[in-house]
Image: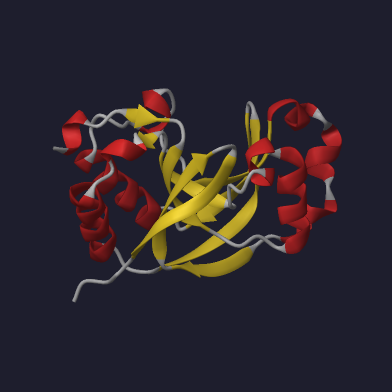
Length: 176
């Protein structure tokens, strides 16, 4: 059932986080999809399934996986760099990795980023050409890190008509 799903770049499973206002403002200036409603987040699976295939069975699988994982107390720790992205690192990353591994195993036809990159828990702040601008990493917004917070759900976000929104939330730690 979950092995035959088609990936769609209009869907993602994510952990939504809250950034300090200055860092959120930098993210909104620097990431085009942020202005279209994509929240600050850690990506778990993207692209996820074509929306037409996300039925009660798919929702049930995601909900069951979420229920097996506890609410996460995460720290957005420091600014770091990939070649094309400036991001906030996440600590501890073990619980996020375990959640990603369970989702990846349940949805083998939907590898993260099409299998192009290994999974590294992070929150993107600047992407694309802005990464090369020294001012982006020198922005005082980075000084608002570290930030601790609890993350209590997986969100299914989808893009429709140029806007992104949360379509479903799956509670972490709901088993029991």
